[in-house]
Image 1 (cartoon, rainbow, N blue to C red):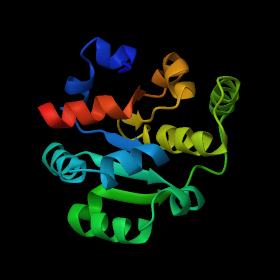
Image 2 (image 1 turned 30 degrees about the vertical axis):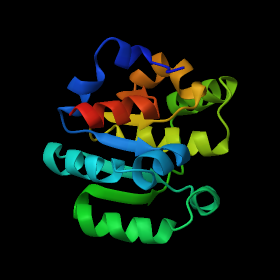
Image 3 (image 1 turned 135 degrees about the vertical axis):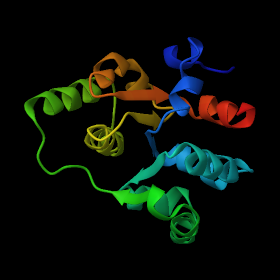
Image 4 (image 1 turned 90 degrees about the horizontal axis):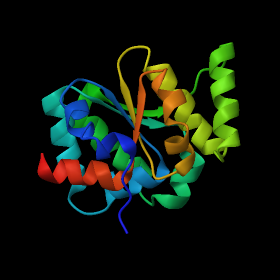
Length: 167
């Protein structure tokens, strides 16, 4: 059964993808969007055409388990996207009080260590431009109102894939 986040259900995803923004993928999203099927070329085209940035947080230990050829994937994306790809982005070392409170809320929603890294990287990058987290983890979707205060939106992987197919 397909799931739809509030953002996509209201038709917000397509307008979001029409303006420059950061796209932050979690581990599962990297596998589904960049490794499986023909989705990789679609997202590369979107990023090149719409001036987005593709960001993969520093979750190297998880990627080594879930994505076999992670290094070759990174090298290929660096070549194809040039300055629009930020691999293994590290979260900020120091967090503001507001951001610490957000991380506490995310933990309460069930986020694990890797999810918190994704959220920290997204919030760090949202200072420059709006940011989109692509993840199926419910903790992000449950905390969407709090994340929006940081200009961070959240969509399910399937929603992004459908938008890529129709766009």
